[in-house]
Image 1 (tube, rainbow, N blue to C red):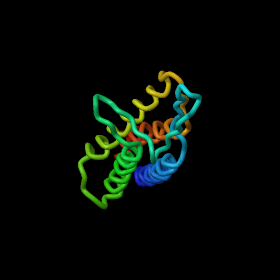
Image 2 (image 1 turned 30 degrees about the horizontal axis):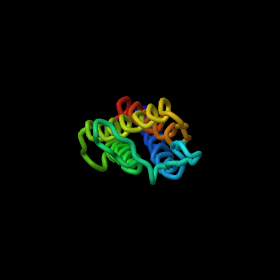
Image 3 (image 1 turned 90 degrees about the vertical axis):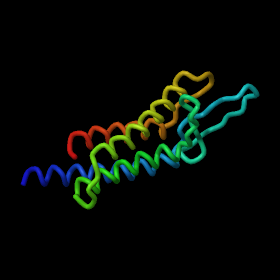
Length: 135
């Protein structure tokens, strides 16, 4: 009985993480200042980060994170028989790119960090922790 409640709590937490991931799409992820005094603000919809020559749009990073969490919910609720590695890999991918974005904005000249990149990092890392512990 206690295990069942634990799984229900984890699916509620995972559902909240999916909602927060979708909120990340509309929040500013960072601002980059130009030499002429102009600024560009990127969000989860219109920005992208590059890691090892692979340029991935921010929305794809959010989508992979949300898909990994949804796959974990389906697995925990036994709606789908998925190997545990599928949601873990999706969230690892999303985490790596969101952490890359955080580092680029942290150490880039004239760049500032927005709440979207912080929230997607919390969502993906929190999702990984919940999935590894509960599913």
